[in-house]
Amino acid sequence: MRYELTRLNIFLPKKPATLLALYQLTMQLYKDFGGCTHSITHPPVFIGYWLEPLKPAPAREEIVWFIVDVDQRLDDPRLEYFSHLKKSLEEKTGEGEVWITCHPVWRFISPSRL
Image (cartoon, rainbow, N blue to C red; front, side, top):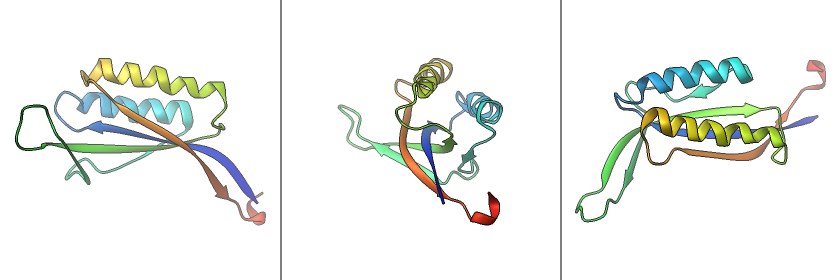
């Protein structure tokens, strides 16, 4: 048997200005959805690079990746929660852009677990 969920991916830079927000996000996702999974913060698992205008070398940033599976389909209006979360994270961290992506996932459940 399969069970449809929505998986959200939240990407935040790990730097002194965001450490409190990372902790608060973990606690909020635990409270609102029963938990989350995230990459380790020391040493970081993910490194991001991007080009900045007028700079010869790419910028480098350590990234913390949060994974959240929610019991909602992609067309569920309750997913609007994450639009508000995105805005809140951008305000708390001072980041110009916080990436939150989502896609459907199917969890396969053994008949013995029903």
